[in-house]
Image 1 (cartoon, rainbow, N blue to C red):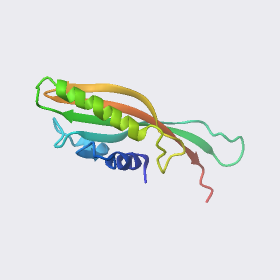
Image 2 (cartoon, rainbow, N blue to C red; image 1 turned 90 degrees about the horizontal axis):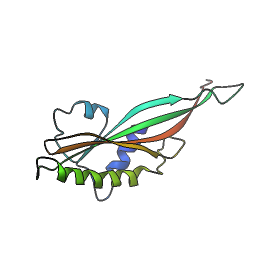
Image 3 (cartoon, helix red, strand yellow; image 1 turned 90 degrees about the vertical axis):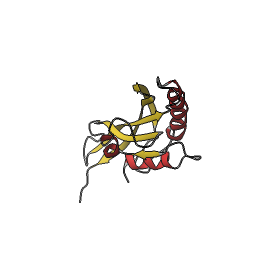
Image 4 (cartoon, helix red, strand yellow; image 1 turned 180 degrees about the vertical axis):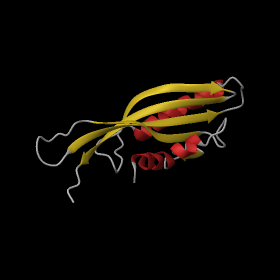
Length: 144
């Protein structure tokens, strides 16, 4: 499994379900003006950075820091300006943070930590918000 698929699975198994749809980068890229189902969460790797090897001799061992974005989209057309969707976003942010902070994905070597949150867009009754999380993995040279 991958980091993205581990986080998608984690968000998909929230009980009671918080999202009508949880997907990855390809799903996010295919959105037209609005998602077909809301609330929705899209998980994608935003950035990765590796540290220099931790070993002076022998096989390479590096720490890979991964920043994972969870883009939450809520639509509530009960008011066109987006106030209702804004409240939905606040609730969904709390749910996502509760599900991910301290979670250790199967493919990672560290727990997930929250980095930041950012409003991306609020328009036509839909609110788009990005939550950024980080975790790390050890990369080791394959000697085979």
